[in-house]
Image 1 (cartoon, helix red, strand yellow):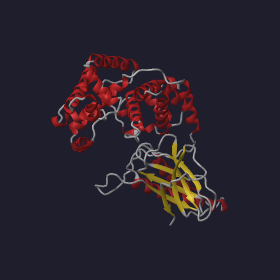
Image 2 (spheres, one colour):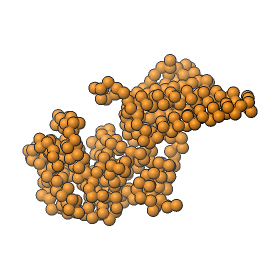
Image 3 (tube, helix red, strand yellow):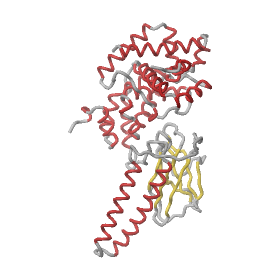
Image 4 (cartoon, one colour):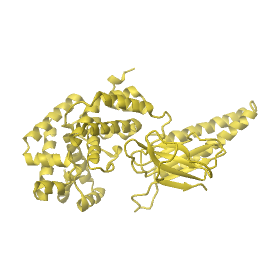
Length: 180
Length: 255
Protein backbone atom coordinates (compact mmCIF):
# COMPACT_ATOMS: atom_id res chain seq x y z
CA UNK A 1 0.00 0.00 0.00
CA UNK A 2 1.38 3.41 -0.92
CA UNK A 3 1.86 6.00 1.77
CA UNK A 4 0.31 9.41 1.48
CA UNK A 5 3.70 10.87 0.56
CA UNK A 6 3.79 8.66 -2.56
CA UNK A 7 0.27 9.38 -3.71
CA UNK A 8 -0.55 11.68 -6.61
CA UNK A 9 -3.03 14.49 -6.10
CA UNK A 10 -6.02 12.48 -7.29
CA UNK A 11 -5.23 9.64 -4.91
CA UNK A 12 -4.79 12.09 -2.05
CA UNK A 13 -8.18 13.64 -2.74
CA UNK A 14 -9.73 10.17 -2.79
CA UNK A 15 -8.08 9.37 0.53
CA UNK A 16 -9.34 12.64 1.98
CA UNK A 17 -12.84 11.69 0.91
CA UNK A 18 -12.41 8.66 3.16
CA UNK A 19 -11.37 10.86 6.07
CA UNK A 20 -7.64 10.12 5.85
CA UNK A 21 -5.92 12.82 7.89
CA UNK A 22 -2.46 11.76 6.76
CA UNK A 23 -3.50 12.43 3.16
CA UNK A 24 -4.75 15.86 4.17
CA UNK A 25 -1.43 16.60 5.87
CA UNK A 26 0.41 15.52 2.75
CA UNK A 27 -1.74 17.70 0.52
CA UNK A 28 -1.18 20.63 2.86
CA UNK A 29 2.58 20.08 2.77
CA UNK A 30 2.47 20.05 -1.04
CA UNK A 31 0.38 23.14 -1.61
CA UNK A 32 0.18 25.30 1.51
CA UNK A 33 3.08 27.43 0.24
CA UNK A 34 1.20 28.20 -2.99
CA UNK A 35 -1.98 29.14 -1.18
CA UNK A 36 -0.21 31.16 1.49
CA UNK A 37 1.97 33.04 -1.02
CA UNK A 38 -1.04 34.10 -3.08
CA UNK A 39 -3.05 35.15 -0.02
CA UNK A 40 -0.09 37.05 1.37
CA UNK A 41 0.52 38.78 -1.95
CA UNK A 42 -3.08 39.97 -2.06
CA UNK A 43 -3.56 40.82 1.58
CA UNK A 44 -0.07 41.86 2.64
CA UNK A 45 -0.90 40.66 6.12
CA UNK A 46 0.48 37.40 7.49
CA UNK A 47 -2.33 36.76 9.96
CA UNK A 48 -5.05 37.38 7.38
CA UNK A 49 -3.21 35.21 4.84
CA UNK A 50 -2.99 32.42 7.41
CA UNK A 51 -6.74 32.65 7.97
CA UNK A 52 -7.36 32.29 4.24
CA UNK A 53 -4.99 29.32 4.18
CA UNK A 54 -6.89 27.66 7.03
CA UNK A 55 -10.25 28.37 5.47
CA UNK A 56 -9.35 26.91 2.11
CA UNK A 57 -7.85 23.69 3.45
CA UNK A 58 -10.69 23.22 5.92
CA UNK A 59 -13.15 23.61 3.05
CA UNK A 60 -11.21 21.06 1.07
CA UNK A 61 -11.28 18.66 4.03
CA UNK A 62 -15.00 19.09 4.47
CA UNK A 63 -15.78 18.94 0.79
CA UNK A 64 -13.00 17.23 -1.17
CA UNK A 65 -15.47 16.62 -3.98
CA UNK A 66 -15.31 20.33 -4.75
CA UNK A 67 -12.10 19.66 -6.67
CA UNK A 68 -12.79 17.97 -9.96
CA UNK A 69 -9.55 16.54 -11.33
CA UNK A 70 -11.07 16.27 -14.79
CA UNK A 71 -11.31 20.05 -14.96
CA UNK A 72 -7.75 21.00 -14.10
CA UNK A 73 -4.78 20.53 -11.81
CA UNK A 74 -4.79 21.09 -8.10
CA UNK A 75 -2.02 23.71 -7.90
CA UNK A 76 -3.60 26.35 -10.18
CA UNK A 77 -7.03 25.55 -8.76
CA UNK A 78 -5.85 26.21 -5.22
CA UNK A 79 -3.94 29.31 -6.32
CA UNK A 80 -7.04 30.76 -7.96
CA UNK A 81 -9.23 29.94 -4.98
CA UNK A 82 -6.68 31.58 -2.69
CA UNK A 83 -6.63 34.68 -4.88
CA UNK A 84 -10.43 34.87 -5.05
CA UNK A 85 -10.90 34.40 -1.32
CA UNK A 86 -8.13 36.83 -0.42
CA UNK A 87 -9.62 39.50 -2.69
CA UNK A 88 -12.99 38.93 -1.04
CA UNK A 89 -11.35 39.47 2.34
CA UNK A 90 -9.51 42.52 1.04
CA UNK A 91 -12.70 44.04 -0.25
CA UNK A 92 -14.64 42.95 2.83
CA UNK A 93 -17.24 41.09 0.88
CA UNK A 94 -18.88 37.72 0.99
CA UNK A 95 -17.26 34.98 -1.07
CA UNK A 96 -18.04 35.70 -4.71
CA UNK A 97 -17.10 32.26 -6.00
CA UNK A 98 -17.59 28.96 -4.26
CA UNK A 99 -14.62 26.64 -4.46
CA UNK A 100 -16.43 24.00 -6.45
CA UNK A 101 -17.26 26.62 -9.09
CA UNK A 102 -13.64 27.52 -9.68
CA UNK A 103 -12.58 25.92 -12.93
CA UNK A 104 -8.97 26.33 -13.88
CA UNK A 105 -7.84 24.72 -17.06
CA UNK A 106 -4.20 25.47 -17.74
CA UNK A 107 -2.17 24.21 -20.66
CA UNK A 108 0.33 22.63 -20.45
CA UNK A 109 -0.39 20.15 -17.69
CA UNK A 110 0.92 21.54 -14.41
CA UNK A 111 0.46 18.46 -12.24
CA UNK A 112 4.18 17.81 -11.99
CA UNK A 113 6.30 20.10 -9.86
CA UNK A 114 9.03 20.29 -12.50
CA UNK A 115 6.59 21.19 -15.29
CA UNK A 116 4.97 23.75 -13.05
CA UNK A 117 8.33 25.26 -12.17
CA UNK A 118 9.33 25.63 -15.82
CA UNK A 119 6.02 27.22 -16.76
CA UNK A 120 6.07 29.60 -13.83
CA UNK A 121 9.59 30.73 -14.72
CA UNK A 122 8.47 31.46 -18.28
CA UNK A 123 5.52 33.47 -17.06
CA UNK A 124 7.72 35.41 -14.64
CA UNK A 125 10.09 36.22 -17.48
CA UNK A 126 7.23 37.49 -19.63
CA UNK A 127 5.94 39.63 -16.77
CA UNK A 128 9.41 41.03 -16.20
CA UNK A 129 9.77 42.01 -19.87
CA UNK A 130 6.28 43.43 -20.10
CA UNK A 131 5.85 47.23 -20.16
CA UNK A 132 5.48 48.40 -16.56
CA UNK A 133 2.05 49.94 -17.16
CA UNK A 134 0.73 46.72 -18.63
CA UNK A 135 2.12 44.61 -15.80
CA UNK A 136 0.68 47.06 -13.31
CA UNK A 137 -2.79 46.86 -14.89
CA UNK A 138 -2.74 43.06 -14.65
CA UNK A 139 -1.54 43.14 -11.06
CA UNK A 140 -4.02 45.79 -9.96
CA UNK A 141 -6.85 43.72 -11.41
CA UNK A 142 -5.73 40.33 -10.21
CA UNK A 143 -3.88 40.89 -6.95
CA UNK A 144 -5.46 44.08 -5.73
CA UNK A 145 -9.00 43.31 -6.80
CA UNK A 146 -9.65 46.60 -8.56
CA UNK A 147 -12.31 46.82 -11.23
CA UNK A 148 -11.35 48.07 -14.67
CA UNK A 149 -12.97 51.43 -14.02
CA UNK A 150 -11.12 51.77 -10.71
CA UNK A 151 -7.83 51.02 -12.47
CA UNK A 152 -8.66 53.62 -15.08
CA UNK A 153 -9.45 56.14 -12.34
CA UNK A 154 -6.29 55.39 -10.35
CA UNK A 155 -3.95 55.46 -13.31
CA UNK A 156 -5.65 58.27 -15.20
CA UNK A 157 -5.63 56.12 -18.32
CA UNK A 158 -8.69 55.75 -20.57
CA UNK A 159 -10.86 52.72 -19.90
CA UNK A 160 -10.22 51.37 -23.38
CA UNK A 161 -6.48 51.50 -22.84
CA UNK A 162 -6.80 49.54 -19.61
CA UNK A 163 -8.94 46.90 -21.31
CA UNK A 164 -6.48 46.52 -24.15
CA UNK A 165 -3.50 46.29 -21.82
CA UNK A 166 -5.14 43.60 -19.76
CA UNK A 167 -6.18 41.51 -22.73
CA UNK A 168 -2.87 41.72 -24.53
CA UNK A 169 -1.08 41.04 -21.24
CA UNK A 170 -2.99 37.80 -20.76
CA UNK A 171 -2.34 36.87 -24.39
CA UNK A 172 1.39 37.31 -23.80
CA UNK A 173 1.22 34.93 -20.83
CA UNK A 174 -0.62 32.41 -22.95
CA UNK A 175 1.95 32.58 -25.73
CA UNK A 176 4.69 32.04 -23.21
CA UNK A 177 3.20 28.80 -21.90
CA UNK A 178 2.19 27.59 -25.35
CA UNK A 179 5.85 27.82 -26.28
CA UNK A 180 6.81 25.76 -23.20
CA UNK B 1 -10.13 30.74 -31.40
CA UNK B 2 -13.20 32.42 -32.82
CA UNK B 3 -14.78 34.78 -30.34
CA UNK B 4 -17.08 37.70 -30.85
CA UNK B 5 -14.69 40.62 -31.16
CA UNK B 6 -16.94 43.03 -29.32
CA UNK B 7 -16.56 40.84 -26.23
CA UNK B 8 -12.88 39.96 -26.58
CA UNK B 9 -11.55 42.53 -24.12
CA UNK B 10 -14.38 42.09 -21.68
CA UNK B 11 -13.68 38.34 -21.61
CA UNK B 12 -10.15 39.05 -20.42
CA UNK B 13 -11.36 41.48 -17.79
CA UNK B 14 -13.99 39.02 -16.59
CA UNK B 15 -11.38 36.27 -16.35
CA UNK B 16 -9.39 38.50 -14.02
CA UNK B 17 -12.52 39.30 -12.04
CA UNK B 18 -12.39 43.02 -12.74
CA UNK B 19 -15.36 43.50 -15.06
CA UNK B 20 -18.36 45.09 -13.40
CA UNK B 21 -21.69 46.73 -13.94
CA UNK B 22 -23.69 46.51 -17.12
CA UNK B 23 -20.73 45.25 -19.14
CA UNK B 24 -20.44 42.25 -16.81
CA UNK B 25 -24.16 41.54 -17.03
CA UNK B 26 -24.11 41.79 -20.81
CA UNK B 27 -21.10 39.50 -21.08
CA UNK B 28 -22.55 36.88 -18.75
CA UNK B 29 -25.74 36.88 -20.76
CA UNK B 30 -23.74 36.44 -23.95
CA UNK B 31 -21.70 33.61 -22.43
CA UNK B 32 -24.87 31.68 -21.68
CA UNK B 33 -25.46 31.25 -25.37
CA UNK B 34 -22.03 31.37 -26.97
CA UNK B 35 -19.89 28.25 -26.73
CA UNK B 36 -16.84 29.73 -28.46
CA UNK B 37 -16.72 32.69 -26.09
CA UNK B 38 -17.19 30.32 -23.15
CA UNK B 39 -14.19 28.29 -24.33
CA UNK B 40 -12.13 31.43 -24.68
CA UNK B 41 -13.25 32.57 -21.24
CA UNK B 42 -12.10 29.26 -19.73
CA UNK B 43 -8.77 29.63 -21.50
CA UNK B 44 -8.39 33.17 -20.20
CA UNK B 45 -9.13 32.00 -16.68
CA UNK B 46 -6.32 29.51 -17.12
CA UNK B 47 -4.06 32.34 -18.27
CA UNK B 48 -5.06 34.32 -15.19
CA UNK B 49 -4.24 31.33 -12.99
CA UNK B 50 -0.67 31.54 -14.27
CA UNK B 51 -0.48 34.95 -12.65
CA UNK B 52 -1.47 33.45 -9.32
CA UNK B 53 1.14 30.74 -9.66
CA UNK B 54 3.93 33.27 -10.14
CA UNK B 55 3.66 34.45 -6.56
CA UNK B 56 6.32 33.35 -4.16
CA UNK B 57 7.05 34.19 -0.59
CA UNK B 58 7.76 32.76 2.83
CA UNK B 59 6.34 29.40 3.81
CA UNK B 60 3.34 29.55 6.11
CA UNK B 61 4.25 29.42 9.80
CA UNK B 62 4.49 25.95 11.33
CA UNK B 63 1.61 26.74 13.66
CA UNK B 64 -0.73 26.96 10.66
CA UNK B 65 -0.23 23.26 9.96
CA UNK B 66 -0.79 22.37 13.61
CA UNK B 67 -3.91 24.54 13.66
CA UNK B 68 -5.27 22.87 10.54
CA UNK B 69 -4.66 19.34 11.74
CA UNK B 70 -6.19 20.14 15.12
CA UNK B 71 -9.17 21.63 13.36
CA UNK B 72 -9.58 18.54 11.24
CA UNK B 73 -9.32 16.26 14.24
CA UNK B 74 -12.07 18.22 15.96
CA UNK B 75 -14.48 17.86 13.07
CA UNK B 76 -17.39 15.69 14.22
CA UNK B 77 -17.23 12.11 13.01
CA UNK B 78 -20.83 12.15 11.89
CA UNK B 79 -20.51 15.14 9.61
CA UNK B 80 -23.63 16.59 8.17
CA UNK B 81 -23.76 15.63 4.55
CA UNK B 82 -22.68 18.29 2.11
CA UNK B 83 -24.34 18.31 -1.22
CA UNK B 84 -22.38 18.85 -4.37
CA UNK B 85 -24.91 20.72 -6.45
CA UNK B 86 -27.50 23.40 -6.14
CA UNK B 87 -29.96 21.32 -8.10
CA UNK B 88 -30.89 19.02 -5.35
CA UNK B 89 -34.22 19.93 -3.91
CA UNK B 90 -36.64 17.66 -5.69
CA UNK B 91 -34.40 14.64 -5.63
CA UNK B 92 -33.18 15.29 -2.12
CA UNK B 93 -36.69 15.74 -0.81
CA UNK B 94 -37.97 12.62 -2.47
CA UNK B 95 -35.00 10.56 -1.36
CA UNK B 96 -35.22 11.86 2.18
CA UNK B 97 -38.91 11.11 2.42
CA UNK B 98 -38.39 7.63 1.02
CA UNK B 99 -35.54 7.07 3.44
CA UNK B 100 -37.56 8.29 6.38
CA UNK B 101 -40.49 6.08 5.49
CA UNK B 102 -38.31 3.04 4.93
CA UNK B 103 -36.40 3.59 8.15
CA UNK B 104 -39.67 4.00 10.03
CA UNK B 105 -40.98 0.75 8.54
CA UNK B 106 -37.79 -1.07 9.37
CA UNK B 107 -37.79 0.36 12.88
CA UNK B 108 -41.33 -0.86 13.37
CA UNK B 109 -40.56 -4.28 12.03
CA UNK B 110 -37.48 -4.50 14.12
CA UNK B 111 -39.50 -3.95 17.27
CA UNK B 112 -41.92 -6.63 16.22
CA UNK B 113 -39.12 -8.93 15.35
CA UNK B 114 -37.72 -8.71 18.82
CA UNK B 115 -41.00 -10.05 20.16
CA UNK B 116 -41.21 -12.84 17.69
CA UNK B 117 -37.68 -14.06 17.34
CA UNK B 118 -37.57 -17.18 15.28
CA UNK B 119 -41.01 -16.61 13.93
CA UNK B 120 -40.04 -16.37 10.38
CA UNK B 121 -37.14 -16.25 8.02
CA UNK B 122 -39.42 -14.59 5.51
CA UNK B 123 -39.82 -11.53 7.70
CA UNK B 124 -36.12 -11.54 8.33
CA UNK B 125 -35.42 -11.58 4.61
CA UNK B 126 -37.94 -8.83 4.05
CA UNK B 127 -36.28 -6.75 6.72
CA UNK B 128 -32.86 -7.29 5.18
CA UNK B 129 -34.26 -6.21 1.83
CA UNK B 130 -35.76 -3.08 3.29
CA UNK B 131 -32.60 -2.29 5.21
CA UNK B 132 -30.67 -2.70 1.98
CA UNK B 133 -33.11 -0.33 0.30
CA UNK B 134 -32.65 2.18 3.12
CA UNK B 135 -28.89 1.85 2.86
CA UNK B 136 -29.00 2.44 -0.88
CA UNK B 137 -31.24 5.46 -0.45
CA UNK B 138 -28.81 6.93 2.07
CA UNK B 139 -25.85 6.14 -0.17
CA UNK B 140 -27.53 7.78 -3.14
CA UNK B 141 -28.56 10.77 -1.11
CA UNK B 142 -25.07 11.27 0.23
CA UNK B 143 -23.02 10.29 -2.83
CA UNK B 144 -20.44 12.82 -3.95
CA UNK B 145 -21.63 12.58 -7.51
CA UNK B 146 -25.33 12.80 -6.71
CA UNK B 147 -27.15 15.24 -8.95
CA UNK B 148 -29.95 17.02 -7.19
CA UNK B 149 -32.36 18.67 -9.52
CA UNK B 150 -34.41 21.54 -8.29
CA UNK B 151 -37.43 22.04 -10.48
CA UNK B 152 -38.29 25.70 -10.44
CA UNK B 153 -40.06 28.16 -12.68
CA UNK B 154 -37.71 28.78 -15.58
CA UNK B 155 -37.09 32.43 -14.76
CA UNK B 156 -36.58 31.77 -11.06
CA UNK B 157 -32.81 32.18 -11.03
CA UNK B 158 -32.10 33.06 -7.41
CA UNK B 159 -34.27 30.94 -5.17
CA UNK B 160 -34.23 32.04 -1.52
CA UNK B 161 -32.70 29.98 1.29
CA UNK B 162 -35.04 27.20 2.30
CA UNK B 163 -35.09 24.41 4.86
CA UNK B 164 -37.36 21.42 5.32
CA UNK B 165 -37.57 19.46 8.56
CA UNK B 166 -39.21 16.05 8.95
CA UNK B 167 -39.57 15.24 12.62
CA UNK B 168 -41.08 12.26 14.41
CA UNK B 169 -41.42 12.66 18.14
CA UNK B 170 -42.44 9.03 18.48
CA UNK B 171 -39.35 7.84 16.58
CA UNK B 172 -37.14 10.54 18.01
CA UNK B 173 -36.01 11.15 14.44
CA UNK B 174 -35.28 14.35 12.58
CA UNK B 175 -34.19 14.93 9.02
CA UNK B 176 -33.43 18.46 7.94
CA UNK B 177 -32.63 19.46 4.38
CA UNK B 178 -31.62 22.97 3.41
CA UNK B 179 -30.94 24.63 0.10
CA UNK B 180 -29.68 27.96 -1.25
CA UNK B 181 -28.10 28.87 2.08
CA UNK B 182 -25.81 31.86 2.11
CA UNK B 183 -22.11 31.22 2.75
CA UNK B 184 -21.02 31.49 6.37
CA UNK B 185 -18.44 33.88 7.78
CA UNK B 186 -15.16 32.25 8.82
CA UNK B 187 -15.35 30.11 11.94
CA UNK B 188 -19.15 30.16 12.03
CA UNK B 189 -21.70 27.40 11.57
CA UNK B 190 -25.42 27.16 11.11
CA UNK B 191 -27.25 25.59 14.04
CA UNK B 192 -30.68 24.03 13.88
CA UNK B 193 -32.96 24.43 16.88
CA UNK B 194 -36.00 22.45 17.90
CA UNK B 195 -38.33 24.84 19.68
CA UNK B 196 -40.66 23.03 22.11
CA UNK B 197 -44.03 24.45 23.19
CA UNK B 198 -42.48 25.33 26.51
CA UNK B 199 -38.92 25.76 27.65
CA UNK B 200 -35.69 26.66 25.96
CA UNK B 201 -34.83 25.84 22.33
CA UNK B 202 -33.01 22.53 21.96
CA UNK B 203 -29.87 22.27 19.79
CA UNK B 204 -30.69 19.99 16.84
CA UNK B 205 -27.48 19.83 14.87
CA UNK B 206 -24.74 21.92 13.34
CA UNK B 207 -24.30 22.18 9.60
CA UNK B 208 -22.42 24.10 6.97
CA UNK B 209 -23.65 24.52 3.44
CA UNK B 210 -21.77 23.05 0.53
CA UNK B 211 -20.55 25.17 -2.34
CA UNK B 212 -24.08 25.57 -3.63
CA UNK B 213 -25.82 26.25 -0.35
CA UNK B 214 -27.11 22.73 0.32
CA UNK B 215 -26.88 20.80 3.59
CA UNK B 216 -28.52 17.89 5.36
CA UNK B 217 -28.74 16.96 9.03
CA UNK B 218 -29.84 13.41 9.78
CA UNK B 219 -30.99 12.31 13.21
CA UNK B 220 -29.07 14.63 15.51
CA UNK B 221 -29.06 13.66 19.22
CA UNK B 222 -32.32 14.88 20.74
CA UNK B 223 -34.09 14.24 24.04
CA UNK B 224 -36.77 11.57 23.69
CA UNK B 225 -40.42 12.44 23.24
CA UNK B 226 -40.11 16.18 22.93
CA UNK B 227 -42.85 18.02 21.06
CA UNK B 228 -41.72 20.39 18.32
CA UNK B 229 -43.56 23.67 18.05
CA UNK B 230 -41.13 25.05 15.48
CA UNK B 231 -37.64 24.77 14.03
CA UNK B 232 -35.24 27.63 13.71
CA UNK B 233 -31.76 28.31 12.38
CA UNK B 234 -29.14 30.66 13.75
CA UNK B 235 -25.51 31.40 12.95
CA UNK B 236 -23.24 30.29 15.77
CA UNK B 237 -19.55 29.91 16.58
CA UNK B 238 -18.03 26.88 14.90
CA UNK B 239 -18.47 24.59 17.91
CA UNK B 240 -22.13 25.48 18.23
CA UNK B 241 -24.04 27.01 21.14
CA UNK B 242 -26.35 25.75 23.83
CA UNK B 243 -28.65 28.73 23.43
CA UNK B 244 -29.46 30.48 20.16
CA UNK B 245 -27.54 33.61 19.23
CA UNK B 246 -29.90 36.17 17.83
CA UNK B 247 -31.07 36.86 15.22
CA UNK B 248 -32.94 33.78 14.11
CA UNK B 249 -32.34 33.75 10.38
CA UNK B 250 -34.84 31.06 9.36
CA UNK B 251 -37.84 29.64 11.18
CA UNK B 252 -40.81 27.40 10.53
CA UNK B 253 -43.68 26.30 12.75
CA UNK B 254 -44.43 22.61 13.17
CA UNK B 255 -47.57 21.43 11.45
